[in-house]
Every structure is written in structure tokens, then in C-alpha cells.
Length: 138
Image (cartoon, rainbow, N blue to C red; front, side, top):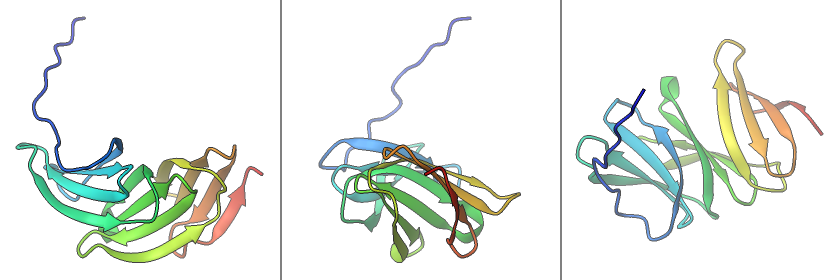
């Protein structure tokens, strides 16, 4: 089976490398996280930069958009997790738990859990409602 791939658009707006992407609040929005420490929102159909969503204190390595609340989880190089309201870019929470970068963020809505995978070798499980730590592999 042959797959043909071609460039539709190039996202221009970050001043440093883009490390992660996440779907947005509708099918035409894409969030990007970068070494320049900000999250941008893009229109997928046009590739046009729509708006900055959030600015954090370190390079962004992981993003996960949580639809029901219109919130974005941001994992950074320093191991911090930020929860941001995408409507206004307001930082709702900042959790410093992991000692090294957060490389992946996932949500299991059936269990009401948030999962973080870190470069410190650990996997942590958080209650999605109050962001309290439930379990860790360390």
C-alpha cells in the first residue's frame, strides 16, 4: 500500500523548535508547544497562526487538550505540569512533581485519571478532578 504525503502548510510563528502538538477545541484548531516556552493555536486548514494560548517558564515537551473543560495540560522540560484555560490563557494550576521532562500526557475519562510519563523514569497517575496524585511508579 502506497501512501502519498505532501506539505499542506508550514507553521510559522514560534521563535524556536516545535516539540509537540495537540488537537484543539474544534477540528480546525491545532495547538503547538515549543522551546520558546509558549503554546500557539493554529488554523489547520490555512496554517495561519491564530493566537498565543499560554506562556510558561520552560520548553514545552507535551500537550494534551481536555475537551469538556476547554483546558490544556502542558508538560515542560523541567518536569512541571501546567493546566491552562484555553479561552483566556489563564494558568489554573502549576504542579511541580517530576524531576525531569514530561514527555507524554494522557487522560482516561472512564477512570477520571490523568497520566504523566517523565524522563525521570516514572509514570504518575493523577485524579483528573482535583489533580491530586493517586499513584506513581517510583
